[in-house]
Length: 90
Image 1 (cartoon, one colour):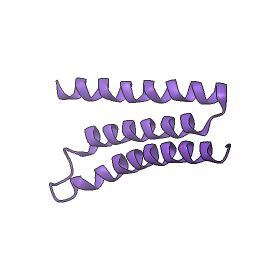
Image 2 (spheres, rainbow, N blue to C red):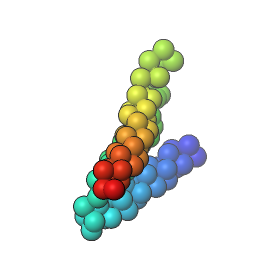
Image 3 (cartoon, helix red, strand yellow):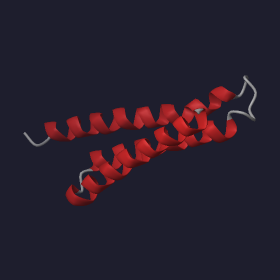
């Protein structure tokens, strides 16, 4: 059952990534490209967790969460960049 749910979550992350990629291709707004990349990274984290978690010991499993941390930092950076770009237009 866990494998089925991991696959469903991976599919949802990749669907979100494609959703934002479509908006990036239409608008050329960097926010959508960075969101697409962040959701792809979260999907990669989920895939690595499903494939590597059974083989890693408890002392090294936390290294997988660096990928998720990078995705969240990318989202925060994208929001910050979007807000910062709006201030220069005034």
